[in-house]
Amino acid sequence: MTIPVEARAHQGREAGIVSRLLAAGLDLVVVTVVLVATYGGWCVALFVLRPRSFTFPQPSSELVFVAYVLVAVACLALPWWIDGRSYGQHVMGLRVTTLDGELMRLPRAVLRALVCVAFPLGLLWVVVSRRDAALHDVLLRTTVHYDWTTWRDR
Image 1: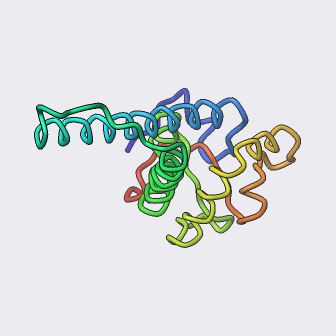
Image 2: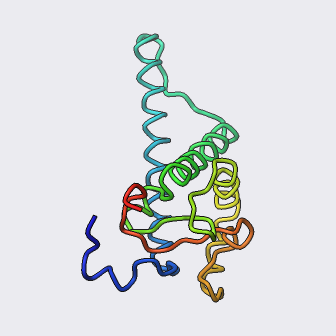
């Protein structure tokens, strides 16, 4: 893959707070869309099964919270494990790797996703970090850098 001329100067550099916040925002949109689509599918299934007695389901706040955590962790951990980038990071040209430049194994990707979901403000540590590392990067020895190549191009 050819890297755009404008991006070549940034290729491989650690990503800053703006790029990472934009990617996180896009990932939050993806999680929200998945949750809304799941609720919509649940409503359609109930309507098809019981059209005369259909009412919109009202899930408990605990169920919504658990569903959010599960979907958010899956939407982050699986792409990090497979290709090193979530959807938002793909759009922003970012990749998450270990400090050795390798893709994370699944347990580390899941743990990183859990930390990100449980403590999203840890991302703000990028502002004071010398290596542009968020709290979860420091804890799990990962880095986020600009990378417009596909993992298979390496």
